Length: 349
Image 1 (cartoon, rainbow, N blue to C red):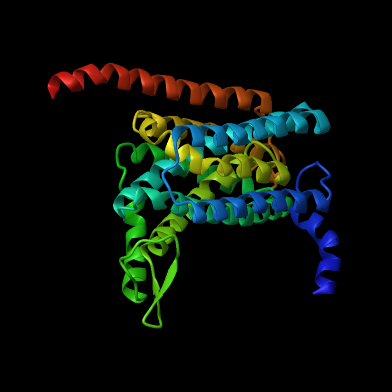
Image 2 (spheres, rainbow, N blue to C red):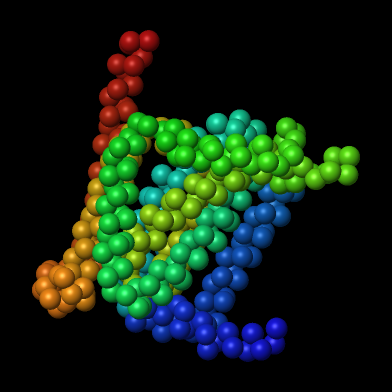
């Protein structure tokens, strides 16, 4: 154990390098420790107080998380320069928008399993913890891949292009993700002895026999969903920055307030009728940026003889402006349509 700890500072920088920022190991450990502390408090609080949070409660907590992200972004701007600060804000907004899409699927899963409202916070918290763990693993894997293989940007671009096409295809098809998860969930239900009694626990004992609870089944479904979204979100943010530390912190800030956002905008999500189209354009835009960067860094022998292709790259400031514009137009168009369709729906009913 002692030898492992002693070698950590020398190993970690090699694993997490890939950009130009020189982030000490203790900063990485402190960042992860703070995130773990916040999540631990969340788990303790929700376990002690299973309830449906009020609008005021979720608004205050969400406001704290958003304010912390903004302060962190400007702090990064001051300490590391405007380009790094811009990369953080672009990455944070992108991950937040993809997290909102994640929330929409969470809503479908909660409805599908008829999760009682007072237990939804616990289920969401488990989903967020799984998402953080999966994305952290993907971040380190992505950093190592980028560090050693420049052609990985072609793969990232292809993943995002596929994700954009999927977003367009799934517009209005809300049950797709649930159907993909259904077989595994059914296997879990048939394989493991289970109870129908809801609680905040994943396992309970009845007659000296360990049983899985409905909460465990829901967590499995949320975990599978998180895995799918991690595959999309990590290439997306690596299209905006090559700094693993920015990728990690942008993801952490995007996920930390997800539980509160679920209860605050659950009804509003139904009004974002163009969300999938907006995300498709956003992912397509970042895929284009990644493809241009891949050409610029090209080393594949069958493309331009293995030489770099002199193509223009999209500056990070333009990327941030494009992200804000895409998300703003998506929200405005969605709200305009639902507001104008409302009276017609009322008359037809």
